Length: 493
Image (cartoon, rainbow, N blue to C red):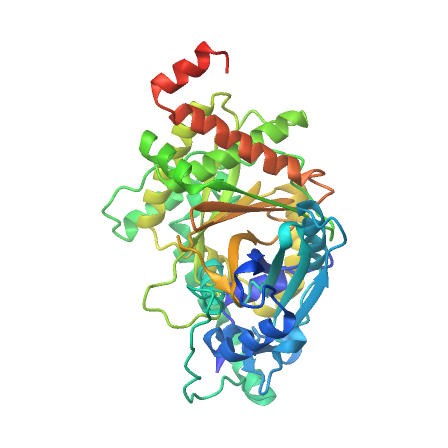
């Protein structure tokens, strides 16, 4: 018996007519490496049938509690036919990146059917250069970034020749309790909910100064500090900068439409920049995003004079955790120096800001996201979440956007014999989190970006991708050895 946590269920409740709460990714494939020279739907179905047991989240569906009184349960689907979840389409000529992104955006708009296991795969043929693409999506209530990467890895091989996978060991099936047992458990949890909610509020008090919206309330910093003192937090927590959220065009209610763009930058260059300035790779990624957002906002004549506020998901899944179903994550809330004109200043301030955020995150329980999800009863949360998200986006947005950086393998991988040339992740847009989301995945020497946007908020998502690449050129120039910079200046470059 496995029940969704409050955080898992929150991703279900966030769905509405304008929000689809699944995460996804696009693998660009070179079929020339495959023995047959092509990747077929039949081969993909065969691979999934052989390895489905390696990704347990894909064989489960939701079982709802009567009257929605509690969070749903997972139950295994016996005899699941993966062919029902795998589709194939072919791009019209010429099959370029813009056409691929448009097709993917249309697929990403559609919500998953909750009566079935919450995943789909789409094999897309006809990409230029003889390439193909595989778009896969899984509901966020079932996986987070780390478990999603693990699920992807289960399908991939180190060579074009697929490895032999051992058949599943006998195991007890995951089943949901019957309606009567569900109802009885829900009633019990409803009676005890006030006490559990109070404990959650007490645990959240120590992190009031890093929780969006709450951090801006009068006395939030003092209350958080006092709570940490009561809990005998002997290490002085670093003071967090202001988390006041400025207005941007991409904050506010979103539509159901999506646009997608993608691209890559060399990971070696990012590492060289990080080493040159004594910061982390993730600090460089955040600086690139800050610079790209600044450029886009300037073009729109909408650049705020204060930093944007970003939510950065952080995996808290322990190394010995065997359960790959559900979410084990928290978030860091951090300002982005979009108000600084100098790229060097943005890089240095971003590094300092992220160091402060990481120190604070390491010194706190990092559970406030889970606690916040558990404050209200399940039935109330399910009904209220979409309306609260939409209202907050108009009155008081808690953040400007979400930026995710997921580490991946630094060696080539293969799917059905085809080489994976790149993997571009995609995440969720909600009224609450804004009309643009930037996600990247490090793979085989590249940082592969995926940018998802609501066209009513960001009209040209490819321009934002272009600004990211321009920002990379800026930082590469800054990290170049002094003689190289002087030589370029001499010839007028």
